[in-house]
Image (tube, rainbow over all chains, first blue to last red; front, side):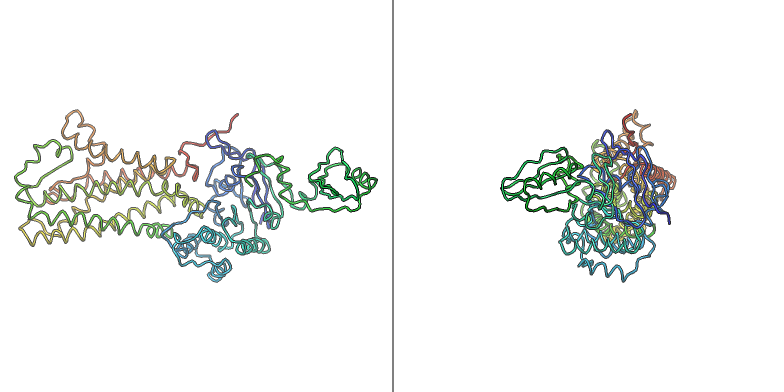
Length: 300
Length: 276
């Protein structure tokens, strides 16, 4: 199997005059969980739909498993489990019938024991009609439909939306298990802590353009450091380039430091700092920094 | 593909039962009314009333004429409504509802999706005709037990199935509209206009000489809702024309659906170029 599972080159999609994605160069490697992050309208769903040939590019190419998304869509979809972000189901049909149909269209390659196990783990009663399901139960049907064929690639658009915390955790476990079995997951989420929890790498998309792609570890380590300095007396000011004060109270100050860490530590020592505390930088902070803390990130 | 076809047929179960029983009720209300109404109808000269001429053929002088003027005439109109509802509800309606995305993400070609859905609609129409045909036969049998009529319940079968080709033709026209237009609202509006235009255009083309050339362009022109279907049998030439037209619109629906960006309400020719 090729090492690269998803590759887009200069992928551009326009709807009339509206931008979908622009010049998107994206690579997802085999066996990784790739988080695709961005606010509503950034282009996440558009990208996923292009990969499945639901939407055609205005320019550029998209390949999955080394196959052209447009020309070999059927072969690609045979190996992909997809959970749409806006899941709509047939109200008059039972969950079981729907899952049966998905299994049959996939050529009856579904292990019934695995399907039953999935339903049990997600606490899903598939015998009811879908009009009777809550939002969360419909989402469970979508999750089972995506996972039950054990596809080589899972494309999941906000997979934990509408689920209670216990089932959310179960879905994230399923994602991790898929990775452990060597399968690849392309995962978009609004919940950044969730992406940080399960993803190996993330891509941050802003207004249709990929602004950065890195491993979670590199992103949170390289971006900046966060320090809390405590003093016995007056808290001094730290006016260095690349240093931002994010919080101050009577005896302590919290700083985000991109440059001049040495100078900060030297001043802290000379001003009589009594304690230095470091905090892990969260993906959310990195994300907001990528978005410049502007309104574009509010939806996230 | 066959799995999707069966699924699509199952999705239409309530529509099949509902339309089948609805049309049966319509026929079952009209037909037994004949024995008591025959005397009154036979005194009316429908041909002299322009409004009735515009609405189509009205011949109440025999049971066959009454059958054709009520059941056959209105079955075609009701089936045309069925065609708008179901033809645009498939693809366009599913796109509006969001269910099309799941189907489009399955390992099927787009032509397979359209063909599965079209086949399910055709079989659904046939099943509706089977259900309503049964009740029509019962209605004819009832009338035959009350008054003397020229036809047997079995004679009503080809007459009822006469509405099958025109229904398929309208279904495929509406499937094409649903496959190529951005949403169901636009598709069903145009589909309804096409049917109204076709219905009145056909009737008026027989009344107004200048409109005569219009008739052969309209589907209702090829639908016989007169008592002749009992005496002359099914006009296979008309059936062929309607089915060929249906096939043309099915192919157009497949082409339009192949080209479109799905789930985003796009026109089939719309593949925007990025700004230079």
